[in-house]
Image (tube, rainbow, N blue to C red; front, side, top):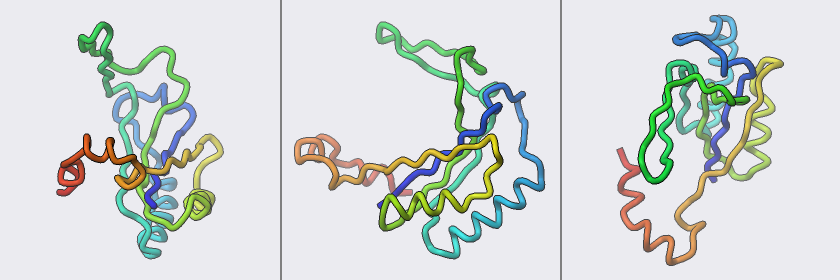
Length: 135
């Protein structure tokens, strides 16, 4: 089972472009990342730039509209993610609980759909999807 652990740091929605975390926090997080890798559960991970350097594309009336960040009504944003492969939801939760997150941070855990999770008609409609995932 694959799970995405999404880091949601409060306050990051107001961060200036190119804001980076302090070195001490990154050092702690790297130890955690190494534990995930050593355990063989880490598939990928990345940190994300703040909203202020991002953009959103919405599709009102079927036409793309680009809005540059930050966004006025945003209350929570993603600061980064880990993709892990574990045997259960509980195991994903256990890994998230070990994260050296700060008091203002939350980790949301979401299971990734696998092709076998879908009914036959959806699998047929998604033919070729797994080839797109390969690097």
